[in-house]
Image 1: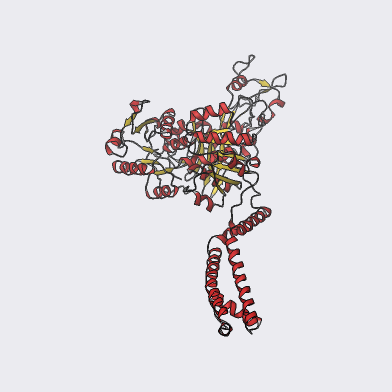
Image 2: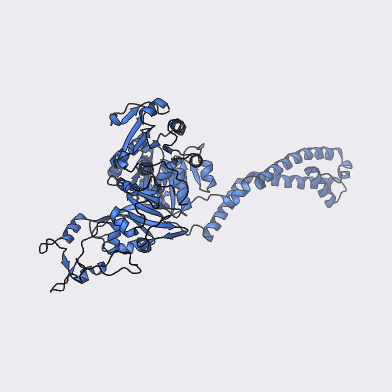
Length: 640
């Protein structure tokens, strides 16, 4: 990430509500993006190739590949174009036509082909390629591993799941200091939504209607005192009283004045505020990995499985070798019994005759006529046997069979994940789990699946069977599996797979894919399923967040509020330039994640006390509808 590199985004309007965004292709994904942008207060219009009953005033009906339709939608004045059709060829056609009409428009292109997307991003300015399956796969993976993720965050080359914690009376985090969570290396706090009831109760009391409530020092001990290691940044984070003259609120009954509960995360962290019932906190957690995957025992087991596989596939070779030995033994017996040749001479001639190398021809020349006929027959048989042996040897040594001895994908027997459906989403989920160190088995009924070579190259075993059949699930050792993911492109098939799996293994954790969010909600409630996820719901926030500009690190959606994590370059004209991070965060309602200064990353408490200066790259999370305040003094956010 180079802070001063050339920006790859067009200029932004200072008023987010005035930004013009066009969404092309209003299928399930496109319309969800369209609706989400409108919820965030963005001026957005859509293009549909068929009449659209909803929001007709904001939707243009026509072929988006034609200049007439794009001009009617306002392509020449628009800042951003989101191409969300499921057909990549159509998306490329719209991209080229849009660039001819508006060369500087920022295009967000939906593509599954990640290599093509990367080349387009490198070749074209103001272009970003996104894939629904790539965006959704990590959340499906997190769900399979037991995390109820609502989004994802890219940190240090790893994808962290974002989830929302609702603090109830029995929650393990109840009473835990937000300061402790902030300094925890395995968590990254994204946003804080305190219980408004507690705020009102702590801010006022019946005895003192205009001052905070009083409690004993022991009840709020953690809220006092200066934070360890903090420097004086111009902001006093200690628990002084309501004035600066030394009056700290002590009364005759030795009670201490409580500062009202902070409503912003940074303020709550600095005050060492504790989580209370009713609070909500959005947090990213360190992704889980299986550290024992590459153990010696597993590698030895895999090698033995390869040997067994090698033996099973080597039956033709064994038969050819046996035939060769039998031919040599029979020939030697005949020559020794019918001629005066010694055993060694007979063996030498028999081997030379069968292999075609020749030698000791006098053995046959001095033999009877019948022996000469026998010799001729053995020459023909020997040529055939040697030909087969050479062919099999070449296949094993130079072909693929010998490599399978060392690289065979072993069928897992326990604690593995079964991925049913090898589509664009299934292949990414299998690879994500495999990279995290977990055993994976793929079930798919199509022997000509285009992703078979990709998944086999990753050394992931594949079984070509219908996953909805109990026999196929039993063959996949479902009773000893850690989890199952039904991610075919058909919702009904996925439901059938999950119900079959629960019949065989009632306690098995299952994750089901549903293209229809409404169907997903009903299926989860009616059948009491563990997790039903919609790729549309998971990917749409990323498209919407990218449309708002900046280097998007991650996003999440909760209660119709879109949270965006992004990186922004601090310049002398930036609204945050010269400010201490903690002060800027509290005034602008964002949460700092980390700061890049040169080759150094500044995190945790040190980050809060850092003053922003020219060239810094601040990574933060903020509600999407408050992004405009970050751009008030800069023409555009930079691509990091």
